[in-house]
Image (tube, rainbow, N blue to C red):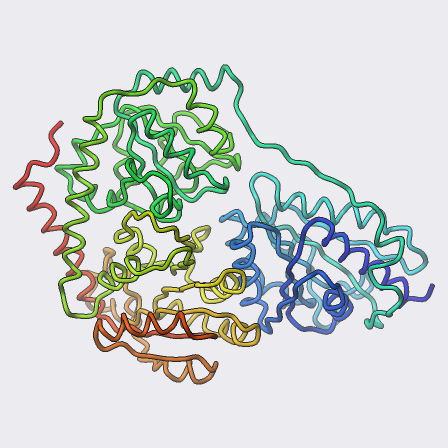
Amino acid sequence: MNHQELMTHYLSSFIHTLYQQNVREVVISPGSRSTPLAILFEEHPEIQTYLDIDERSAGFMALGLAKASGQPVAMLCTSGTAAANYYPAVIEAYYSRVPLIVITSDRPYELQHVGAPQTIDQKNLYGNHVKQFFQMELSEHDLGYVPYNRALTTRAVAESLGLPHGPVQINVPLREPLLPGQQNLFSDEIEMKTKILIKQGTLSLSDTQLQSIADQIGQAKKGVLICGEMESLAIELSVTALAEKTGYPILADPLSQLRRGKHSLSAIIESYDTFLRVETIASQLKPDLIIRLGATPVSKALKLWMEKQVCTNLVIDGGMSWRDPAGVASEMIYCDEKRFCDDLIPRISIQNDDNWINAWRALNQVTKSVLSSIDEEESLSEEKLFIRLTEWLPEDARLFVGNSMPIRELDTFLFAKNRPAKMFANRGANGIDGVVSTAVGIALSKKDTILVIGDLSFFHGMNGLLAAQQNHADLTIILVNNDGGGIFSFLPQASEKMHFESLFGTPHGLDFAHTARLYGADYTKIECWDDFNLTLEKSFRKRGIKIIEVPTKRADNVKKHHHLLNLLQERFTEESIYES
């Protein structure tokens, strides 16, 4: 066989092995060194390809596709700094436990460290931010490395889906010429060989361990379940059943998916971030057991409250990591979250005293009524936007929210409803970059996707709109424009009057109508709430990219939050909602 035939066999086998391991989507960024892989991915009849010119955007788009499907998604780039531009998305995937197959095309060994163009050291390029690095071997003489590469590829996909999920890198050094042949692609005996099967079980506890936890629950009358984002599928019924059996409230982060759905909502407490800011209330809520499931919640008020509690604190993590930023864990329990609930429920007795959970419910109800009062105001505000949006969300909609203020407003104003909807955010590294492209990835997988994003984050990621246009994504973008970094107005540096605006407020004065025209997006700038409601309804009947800009004022945002908190303190004082 000549070079072209050997290369084609090796790369066809690689791609077909990915397919056999259930990799069905790949995001490709164009480049010379990746030519044979890009062409062969396009030729595979069962793999969906997406094109994204910019690698930084492509990495986040692949992240969104993987978030939506829960399955590994591949991404392919050429050699050199193209691979480095994947790094932000790789970091986010690592910390948010999203399976990605990062395929970096590379120059061959003889061109390394000799000054060859577009060549960098790509071995272990992402360091500790991938679960494992793999290097493919391609022989110039025979097909002897094909079985090795098939096993390597199978291991890479399995590693991405191992506990916890995460990205892996596969580096592929390629020699010129780079055009593949057309001989029997994906049908040769080498490519169709029986796949290697990898079976991964569910992490569980022993009977002795379960009974020990059941005994602790039996002794704790004032327990609390705190739920963040979880990888376990269909966990809602299991968690709510555990809450009903124990009589414990569920403090449900918006990304826990527990605030919306057909499951029981009787134990769901969603407004804790607000009422735990009232010290006279927070100081009286003293649990004797805290059970935490999933990722770290968004709420800082909850974190500060947990740090003050003197009680047993169990952290349940199916990904076997150390999720304890507050530093208060008593026991780190490595078990699948759904399995934990299901195995524990038969071992515990029903708690008959409802005083504890009823106190949480009363606090929650009063807080929601105070927060809902913002809907009576006429001025455009971020608070009212989230009340209107989350109230309107159609069944099974996908809502992606940016970091900084949007995720915090969602935490405050996403009230529990029996109408299913799924919430997404990039809370691994909590960055504001790549949000647009991640939402594009979700929109390509799921219909009825909405992105709520701040103006600075939108500026960081608006080049992702080209991939949205080219791949025909249907995405409604609600752009909250307060002309700068709104979250900094809530932080201590806001008191630094001399340099605050230039260093933190960072007003930009951009007219995003030009952005919409550049990328062929439908654009509306809201002037009143009637406009918002009408435009939002229309956006779901249109195809393509729709941008709804909502202008707000940073200073007003701070004032409204302070006003709501003051109203809540007054209500608590008047009504004596909770007394220990």
